[in-house]
Length: 69
Image 1 (cartoon, helix red, strand yellow):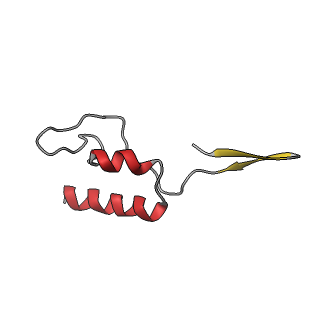
Image 2 (cartoon, helix red, strand yellow; image 1 turned 90 degrees about the vertical axis):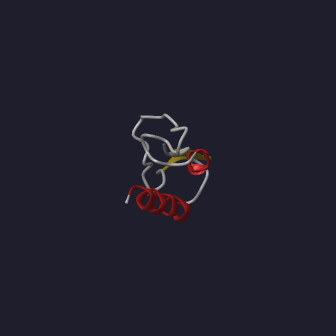
């Protein structure tokens, strides 16, 4: 979700990151692989997604791609 920034006379909407989350709302961790069954991220990757930058998000997406290849 974006952010609304207030500045004295107006509000400015700051759009969310350009890198979309791989979440598909199937949030279950596989005990054998410790990966989410929906998005294939680790718990650590899921936890940091909301606070990391686009460069790291792209790295996470590349890691997911490598896991599923």
